[in-house]
Length: 286
Image 1 (tube, helix red, strand yellow):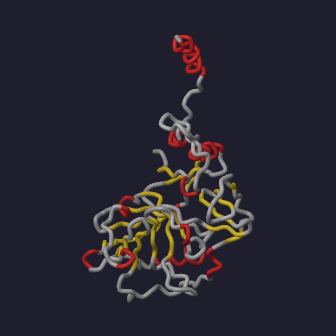
Image 2 (tube, rainbow, N blue to C red):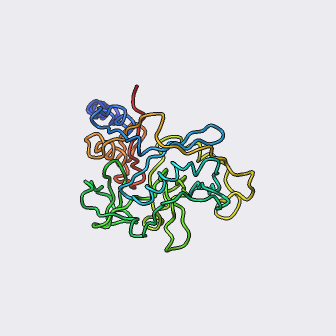
Image 3 (cartoon, rainbow, N blue to C red):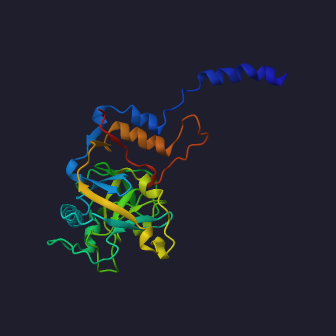
């Protein structure tokens, strides 16, 4: 008897329930043109592997000006032509450069100080997330990038797909001739200890699916295991856009990443790690 009494009320509750909230992907796909900004061609690189795979990288000179200037000089000098990917460490990084360490560097490369790993927070247009972070006082976004901060200084976190500069022990900060990309769970303990110079925009699967190195730290033990790089060139054959992190669309997207109410989810998390709110990037529609 009881279930027949309450069944009509259950039907009323279902009828009154709000429509399913849009997923993050739906918010991105419906974002207006004004929510997107072009990525400058001068900030893009294409790494072409010997097998034809292409990885597109975006540089960010605002956070690593000396290293990015060096990388542009290395590209202009064709330094990486027929070098190789030498390290693929599971759930950590994919690293490339001159395995012999004998190839001469172009003249005029700068030397960055460790203080260049951070920059002043002021002037960035930083929009903080309301969620706690174990590695930084505040995290959020600015200018289309994820940002971590102590309240005065800001830096780029080591999220999946971010590109950094290999170095030896301090005070060495690396020239930019050895680069790596994060291929797994964010190794945030590296933040402020290594220069972060950009991110992979497209083609990261060409790197994450490579055979893992069996040597120490994931280095390939034999020369024939290394993956040849045909070239790294300036610019991209495609045009790319990044979502404006100050836009209403990004605010909705960020909220949806932290609080999933779309059909699959029963319990929203109520928060998100900075690396779990990747800034959307798209190829410019034809």
